[in-house]
Image (cartoon, one colour):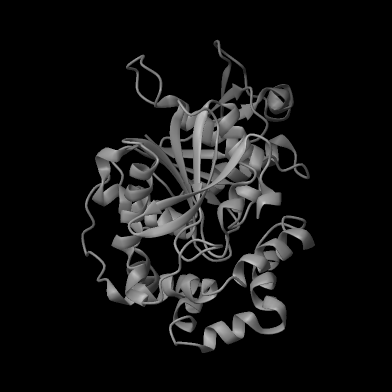
Length: 379
């Protein structure tokens, strides 16, 4: 694992709630701390496209392997993976690192845990960026009301029996897990080397059962019918083509947030942090940076991300407007400055103000110095 460490990064071990967790750290020791929580079936290396960007921006990056993953301690009882225990690990990790308040960036299972952290320890998290991970109190009810999501979530039931899921996933060199990663991502997202690296972590003693125990422990917890409101400012990032989770889950989670924003990233699926890293990094840095502002004017819009090179700028704008018509949010789009003139020419919109804005089909567009386009909701 040490050969994955880049210059300026440090691989350490932290004692967290009686367990030894593998942790990668980067960035200045006195920087604003940000904890990165990976999902299934990744490990800290899933953040390889974000760690350097955050560290270079001055953040102290703390990226653990969650309990059971890739060399972190893997207790055997299913109850050891109860969601509240997983949330307590985040608190314990912060304490072990000498951190009292932090930003949180999370994906997939990491985001599920993060939602629970925001409910249990709201004063500890300054801002949170959560990617393609449902709120744990909403998934079952949403799936019951949406048959397509129920079908997408069928693998959760398949993971419940003992032993058999491990045998199936381990067969033929973890072929099913590898196929799932590649089949749900943009072509080229996972190289042969990437999959070999992941396979090495899956093969660690007790790791595969521990990873599956996250799903098995779901049955030990009853979802709250009325989840409490989330007071921490939250940015939800969601891949438009997520093969596992419908975007309705993102909007459902957003409804619980008193200060929430949703960004849907085009040309990205479930692995958006690896499929569109520049776009995702821009959105993360913009949002976390708002927390450091002291102007008192409240949070502003994030950078918009995700260019579709095979479509005209007008077609992109039309597609995003139509995709967003089902919400009541006040829509605002940001276009990268190198697309601004083409947008005006193709749509006939008139640029006004400084920074420039234009209205097209009743929707505001703004010029921004970023490299992609998405849409935002909330705030």
